[in-house]
Structures are given as C-alpha cells and as structure tokens.
Image 1: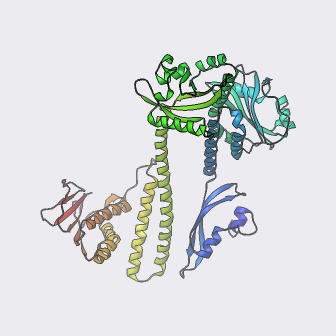
Image 2: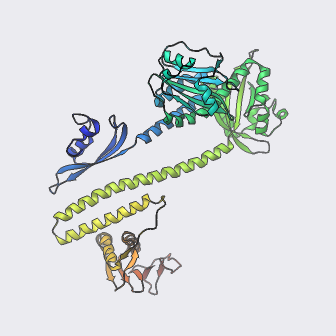
Length: 560
C-alpha cells in the first residue's frame, strides 16, 4: 500500500473520490468526520481525518482514522423494518389485507422478488396458500387448495422446526421447486411460523438470483414470525366468525385472548370465558352493561375520541392499549384489537380481542431502563473516544513544540501541558474500562515530592493567574520533606492531589495562603488561611475538611 493513493487502494478508482475528506483536510487545515460507503470494501465506514503541520504551520499530511460500521447500519435498518412490519400487522386482523405492505418492508433487507404465507395442516402432510405477493407476473398455485408437503421444503421445516435455504431451485425436482424455476425463481427461503408450540405455516421468500438467501436473514425473521403467526390466527379466527355464528362461539370460547362483542350502544352482547377471567366478573354480570363503566377516566376519553373519529369517517387503527378496572378495583393494562362488523340483519357491532399485557408492560419498562443504561454506556464510550482524539491532537502538537522551543520557561509550560494531557488520557482510559472486568492494576514507585511539584505547576493558572485577576491573590507555600517512595499510579496520584488543591482554592474565595506539606509519617496536608465560614464538616477524619484550632485556618488531610 505504501506509495499508492488511497483512492487506488481502497476504492479502485483512478481519480480522488467525490467530496474527498482527505483533500478537504489538506485544503482547509481542519479535522473532518463523516460516513462513507465503499463498494470495493463492501461496507460503511465512519472516518476522521486530522491535519499534521510542520514547524512553519503548513499542513503537510493528514492522519486518517476509519471504523467500519456496516454491522451497526444493518442492525439499525433491520430494527426499523421490524418495527414497521409490526405496525403494519397491527393495522389489520388479516395478513392477506396487508401482505403487500409487509413484503415492501421486508424487501428492504431481503431484496426478495416473491413472498408467500402458507398454512400447514396439523399432521404436516399438506399445505395451502394463505397470502401471496410478488413483483412479477406468473400463474400461481390456487389459494385454498391443499397440496402435499412430501418432497418439499415445507416437509423438512415442519419436521425439524428450523428454517431452510434453497440455494438453487434447479437442483431439486419437486413439483414446487420446478414451478418456481419456471417463474425464474432461482433460490428460496422457508421460515417456520409457530403458534402455541406447533408449526402452523411458513413464511416463504424467493429470489431470481442464485444463493441469494443465507442464515444472516434468520435473525430478523425470528422477530417478525411470532407476530405473523398471531396475525394469521386472528385472520383465520375472523374468517370463522364471518362464516358461522355457532362456529364463532365454539372457537372464541377456547381462545387464549378475551373476546367481546359490543353493540352500537356500548353494551356487552357477548363475552367469552377468557374475557370474564380478565375482568374478574361473571359473564352474567357483564352482559347488557356499558363496557365503558369498566374503564378508568383516561380510557373512557380514548374510547369516546375513537368513536367520534369513526363517526367523522376517519380511519381508526383497530389496535390500541387501554386500562380495565377489574372487579375489586385493580387496574390492569390490556391490548385491544377491535373490528366493526355488521350482521345479517344490518345491526352494527364491534368484535374486540382483549389481551392482558400487565406483565408485559412491566417487562417493557425494565427493558427500557436497561436500554437507557446501555445507551448511557455507549454514550460514555463515544465521549471518551472523542476526548482521546482531542488529547491526541493536544499531545502531538505539544511534543512537536518541545522540539522547536528553546526558552526554558516556555518548555516548562509545555511539559506541564504534556503531563496533564497524558494524565487526562489515563482518566479517559479508566472511563472506558469502567464497565469491563480487568486485572489488578500495576503499581510503580512514586516520588511524592516530584508529584506535588507537578501539581503546583498544573494548578498554577488557578491559584496564581485567576486569583490575582479577581483581586484576591493566593500565596502558595511548599513544605516538602525527605520521604521514601510509595507504590501507586502517578497520573491517579496527581489527579487526587490536584482535586484536593482545587477544593482548597475554591474554599478561599477572598484569597489567602495555601500550604502543601509533606510529612515523613506519610501524611500529605493541604492547608490555607481564609475568611471564616459556616457549615464546616463535623468529622475531622482523614480526607474530610475540618476547622483547626485557629479560627481562620482550615486543613485537608489525606493518609497514604
């Protein structure tokens, strides 16, 4: 790679990329950051470029850092698609009504040409098409007709309970694969739909490209399949309700969700056993009663608003969440899916599916809290990364200046900046490692006298320049003793004593004398004169601020 241009090596181009960020950094002399997708590297990258100056201040090079974020982008896109599919499924009780919209969303990540939903009989010996969507014209197997699963991908999926990928339909001689081949479908993916522990059907995709599908698609489909299975069951249940009232009663009585039929006067006409269990009332106590009487005030307003919107001709989403007041006064969260229907006599009524989601809501709140904590950790990591970049620029430029500056006073100031930058880098490192398990930290022999002198230089702008600028000068006095080396980390020790010194300075708003004393017994003291103030801390223990015997003296004591 050495000696070749970045656009030759990384992008296989003869000229620089459009909007080249390296060129922008060289021309403007400023850091640049952004994202770029590389077709040659087949990924998306987050890049950062920083200018490098010579001694005359001319930009002579750039430092180019890049991090691949392809997987992050893919996961973001998959999450967005899953959310949209769930919203689409929630908009209707029948998958067949929304199959086109579902396929449009899934094509964003699967790039499929065809999507079907099939139903499998309880014995797994036959299947039928339940829903179909494709972007090409071809004769299709008829919906509602039973076909044998023997020799098809459906048979294997039902037997194993696992998804299956067909890389080339030409390699299979089953009637189904041959039909797909005639339509131009060269590869397929079959994903099982499970409901109550049984494979009730499959979600199927086809592509005109060979080996188009792989196991990487399984994860996103696993998030969609449960909702799809429920929607299929709801669709089938709705079919039965429309077909026969007696059959409807038989089915809904055994449903896991509560089912209620409410008339146009808001009164219960029918409630299944599960609905009775959810509310805590006997069915006889519910029939004929206004169902709004079993809701809290906010839920009543929601129902009234939905009714008014429907009266105005607006399309109201069938699914919503509300609260029900159980017998005894307990409020529970429920998920309601409602469909307005008309019977053979022209009477309008609403069929509502009711699911108790109280435990689910509690779990969602816990997951939300966990997600916030995870996001906070990622944010801290990102902040630490940005600080590292800034510190790298400060440290690099400081070290370059040390090679060219001759004045001793200026060199001492630059060395102080260099030392503070390195200590800050250690602080950032500790921040990055905060949530990681790490080995016991290595300790080194430290010259405390040297560290205290460093602290004096580091804090000099605050106790000298800033204090004098306010008109309340602070006198710094050092009393260093001949003490042995101690074990520790230099940057952490400097940070501790620096913070203590800053605390002392903040406690002297009207100036005074600040003394740093190092005793052979291993006690470092910071003390100073100041205007007496109220609110002293009561405990004169190690590390606490406490009054001394003199009325205008305070002392901070830190044990080794």
